[in-house]
Length: 295
Ligand code: NAP
Image (cartoon, rainbow, N blue to C red; front, side, top):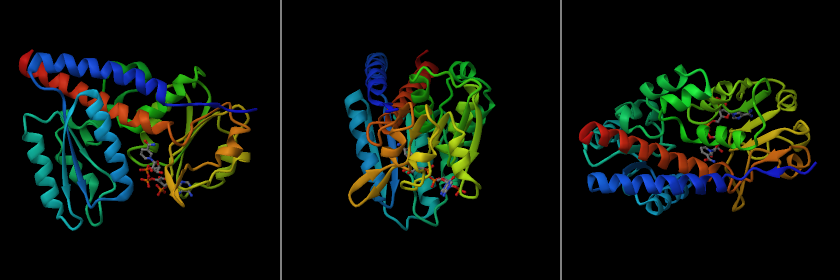
């Protein structure tokens, strides 16, 4: 078997065209396009690359952006004050805290200062609460929750295969609050039977081999061997690891391609859709705020 490439690009392009039209309509209605504020602390190299992608995507969609760059060593209170001020700023529709933040900053505490209606990465306790309260894909869509962008991207990629996850076994490697855990929730909303794995999980090989749907989100280059993959599986590798100037995923892509039915490319897989769902959440947040003020 040779896996079909599960590219995020076609869906990303389609969604971005729709988002651009919504941004234009909003700009006509209220005089200004959606505005995304990004707070970056410490200049992590990986985050900088991703930041450039976000800014470029915003520009192409006709959004305005502002980037608040703070040096490593900035106190948590100062970052929190800046975020609270952006929350009060009527021009700002969405706020993102770029991750990772340098130690000893606590990203979980800082994001609590983002007002829920501007939390376009779905990281505040209010939005997480709303997200995990939904029990099905229909409920998720109906509630139009501001959901974590990468998890949304992964679930949409799985749906793109047209293989119904209902009743199938899904294994998610990684349990972070922005990727693994919300992905497990979305797959469970799609009626898959989900196993959520982490660094203390035992018998990873057996768990991987049992997966009809496998999601890798660990940041561990090549940890999953291609031979572990179940024949015919849908494999989404969200891992982004820089090795000798090359980007590799968490799975041995060459080996996995021989066994999986669908496999995401490391570049052009999850990444473009993650950025797209950031735009999607931002235009949604902007529309909601505008409706509140202008009706
Ligand atoms: P993270 O917060 O560091 O979480 C990594 C997770 O992997 C943790 O739950 C950890 O377990 C688990 N893990 C680590 N080693 C493991 C092992 N040997 N076996 C099983 N589980 C293991 O990372 P993240 O923010 O979720 O990101 C994960 C990866 O996705 C990274 O490569 C990141 O660059 C990438 N990413 C990609 C996109 C995209 O758009 N493509 C977006 C975001 C992130 P513990 O909980 O036990 O520590």
